[in-house]
Amino acid sequence: MDNNWNTELSEYIKQGELKRSEKAKTWETAIGLQDVDGLKTSKYLIDTAKEHIEGNIDIKEAKKRIDEYYKIENNRKMEKASEEADKVSVRITEILSENSFNFNIFELINIHERLFKGIYEEAGKIRDYNFTKKEWILNDDTVIYSSYETIKDTLEYDLEQERNFSYKDLSLEESIKHIARFTSNIWQVHPFCEGNTRTTAVFIIKYLRTFGFKVNDDVFAENSWYFRNALVRANYNNFEKNIFEDTIFLEKFFANLISDTKYELKNEYMYIDYKQEDNKVILNNKYTIEEQAIINIINDNENIKQEEIAKLTGKSIRTIKTIMRQMQEKKIIRRVGGKKNCKWVIL
Image 1 (spheres, rainbow, N blue to C red):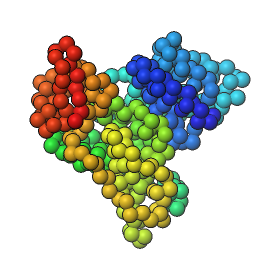
Image 2: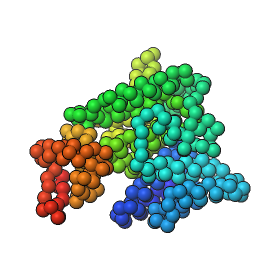
Image 3: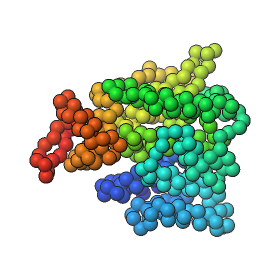
Image 4: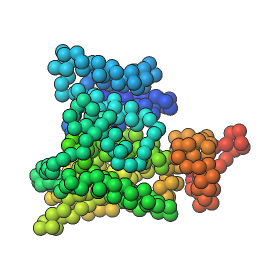
């Protein structure tokens, strides 16, 4: 299927109706992520997505329709190349529509199982062999992935390090750099036989939401192949050719994802023989990651109450009031109007 799906779903975002817009963004992300494996969704999936966005069916009914569609033999033959893309897209949409999230290895495994059950025999199972994979941006060289014998220990270590890490007082630039490195570490483990990038993406989206970010937008939808290649470059070393791990491409991706930057995300820039001078992420603000999350929320709804912000970010109302008071003192935001018609203005 061509990229008309993006145009069709974007219409719901342009209309501005909040519930439809949020659903459309989630579907855009889910469908766009299929591009990491060169998969394309069917017209039937897009029609089903539109029914869900318009509120005619819930996500469970959408999932049921896709499953039943591929039980029909003629459809299976006609849409064979789209079956995986369709099923995984609706499953990603279902997971991203849920508020629950546990920051542990079992959540990562659970996401993989839910995405690929009935598609891969090893869905939800840690790989038990080592492998290599040729990458065009590396001139057919490969990233060195974790040994299958160390997968669980390495994942547990990376997650524990992140769990104990504090973003407090870090600039947004520093936070993005850290998030890029954490994401690339999780991906480099490559715990599953197939579907690692899509599983990592869903896990990271859910994780970033715990900061209050709504990251189900067109950055993932339009640049999922870039996201995968950026993960490759973040984990590749070739000492003979003087090439080293470089997270800058991933940092630019995350900068576009959670702030207002517009870095040009082109796959050709990541080709190891491509020469470029631009190798830094530079943000014009000095917000912390918590402040940026609140700014993004206010951008979506200037009349939002602090109680609602606390709910969206998973923080206590006391913490949100403290952060927002500091933001007012730093002249980042201002509160105008009375109690009944209060709104937030970003300065």
